[in-house]
Amino acid sequence: MDYALIEQQTRALLGGLAEVGRLRPGTVLVIGCSTSEIAGERIGTAGSEAVAAAVFAAVRKGQDEIGFRPAFQCCEHLNRALVVERGLMEERDLEEVSVVPVPRAGGAMAAFAFREAKDPVVVAHLRAEAGIDIGGTLIGMHVKHVAVPVKCAVRQIGAAHVTAAGHRPPLIGGPRAVYELPGR
Image 1 (cartoon, rainbow, N blue to C red):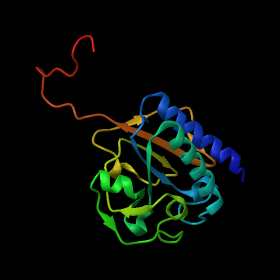
Image 2: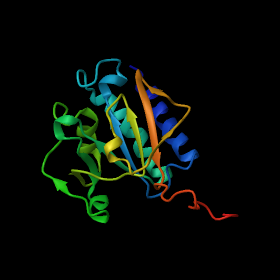
Image 3: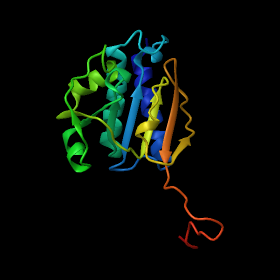
Image 4: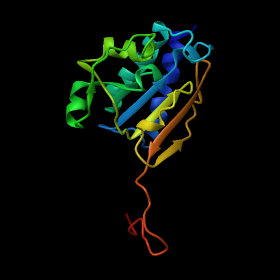
């Protein structure tokens, strides 16, 4: 397993999201990540702390450079709860839940993030402005309405397929509605 390549691919994906305007300072980015899928195995069968460390390192560097706020999604055994830093929980008035993610209940990525993040907590739900799904982890429930697919040059990390999303406000109205002011 080439952990440096995994980190490089993850950083390139984050850079691509920033380039198209989906990641800015303060943006919450939900990250769903199957380390098993990255390693070429079936989701939930071969979690890897080493793979999680490579992804986390890339996210931390991207966070420092871009200023986004990561939220690491746990697996379905923890109802897809999210690991975030306490400051984000307090700013957004999110609901904390009592659990510590571990590889067999939460997933290797969320467990690693919980151990390595600054003042981590687990929250039940949030509405993120952007998301990346590495390996089919189903992040859509945590992306603001209306989720918009984002095509990036990076379509795979390791052996895992990657899907990225941003959001836009819902368009309301009808034939008379105006969605942009001229010249803006």
